[in-house]
Figure 1: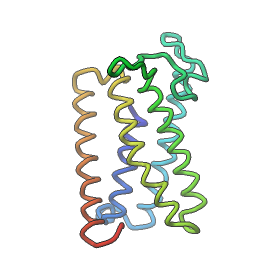
Figure 2 (figure 1 turned 180 degrees about the vertical axis):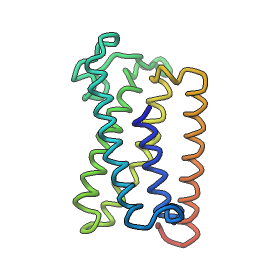
Figure 3 (figure 1 turned 180 degrees about the horizontal axis):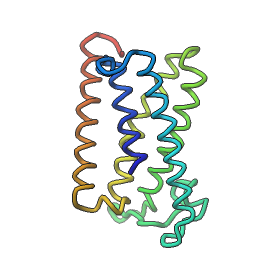
Figure 4 (figure 1 turned 90 degrees about the horizontal axis):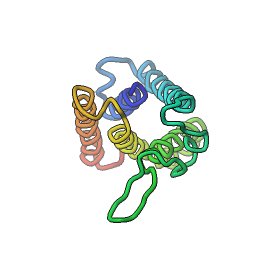
Length: 176
């Protein structure tokens, strides 16, 4: 859950950087530094999540289960009679790989190839959706109660923030 909260803060800080809302609280350089630190913390917590699952004897994930999409057989999903395997585990794995790509392209392309970097950076919204579904359907703490309500409220806040970001991009006549 900590990784997901860090991801939410990361996306909110990124949206805030583009809309200018973050600058109400932080100067530009500390705002960018905070965004970067949140990204690093999110990856670190995601890797810790994988490491903990690797040693969890209750579920018994192998390294392949945790690194190869659809290799795990934990909570398989069947849709319309079609077996999709462990879709929710696969979403988490694919989200992690997308984050690694986002971080690499940010490091190497943000200044030198800004249009390509921006295209990869937009996948962060897909990562957010994948992590939300991953946690909602696999998170044992999210089955019911206050944690589930908090999860859904966090999702609503993020949808509103992303909507504001997209509205801003549309109203200024370019993709900001």
